[in-house]
Length: 201
Image (cartoon, rainbow, N blue to C red; front, side):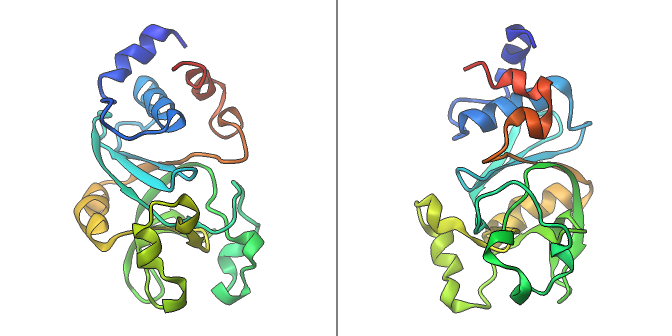
């Protein structure tokens, strides 16, 4: 991909946005290639445990720290979505990398969430506090990335961020969710064209 193409997307990605190099390059590829198909898009950076939301035209909307899967990894164990939480081993508690068409849905208890991958049970939802020993609110507020690795694979954000940024993004539209890999390469997960952006600063 020509450097000129990357430059054409760069004006959407102001330097004040705290994007890692991988997240910035992926956003530039999405904007340049229109891979989001004129839908809002979200980038989840697992290495930084952050969520970034963009409008359909690629302009930045909002970002937030997030809680992600406890185990480092990019793949989902087949059948894990059909297991009860107590049956999911630590090794299976990964947030999968990839590109997903996501939309609003409901959980078993009828709470609203965003399904990233319904079959695997992976979603974005407000932080849960049903297990006090997990200290999820405290972990979400921590500046240490390791503290924010606690979920069974879902992505947890604050109630305020969900209500003010996530819900409005999905209220009238689906959106594309891109989850950056932490083990696999960009090329393996998103293809050669996306990978070509990773070779530029």
